[in-house]
Image (cartoon, rainbow, N blue to C red; front, side, top):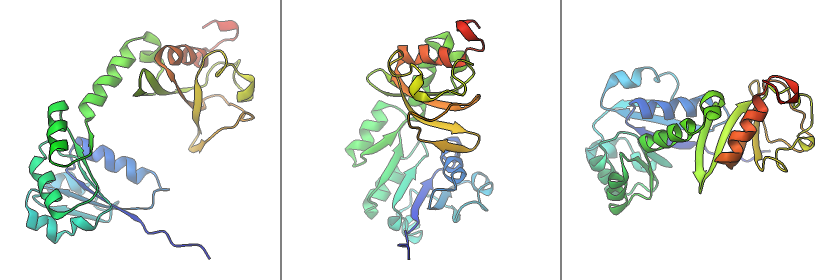
Length: 234
């Protein structure tokens, strides 16, 4: 008999564009064992999710009594996705909420959040800016990349599709990803399935392959994967 695993309870405050993106990502993954509760002061932002989550509430989350009535302290994680959030975060901290992830608008905002006790902040504007800067730095990334994320110290992760006939129907171990291009493969997506590939994994046309490497190496391997003719000709 298997051990029952309690659903992880997540509360998201602020269901604007950023909050909606988080919600959509969480509910799109059926493997997540989550209980989602959404709070916003505008009912319009909540309506689209009312049948997909465990609860939606129209409320002013800067009011500590409101937060108490919603038992916010009992959630495993509270995500504050609204940009003007100092009062909300302060109320959550006063209630003793243990894990809070708060949106920051800039480095100054992040510093203030950390000063009042938040250890986890995220800035979608800053991350979007970094992503655009990386993508426009080379025409290959602008044209080919499906997804690109800066990791640290010049390393990025990117996902691209397999088009090169020199790659199709070959094992990963036969290909020069590590030795020549100095990149690592972290994931492969085929149709709706995701794989953690081993060396004998056979690549197919239109597989989505996720690489980790330096920006220079990522640019080169992206070009290699997306070539449409043999012998290096476009």
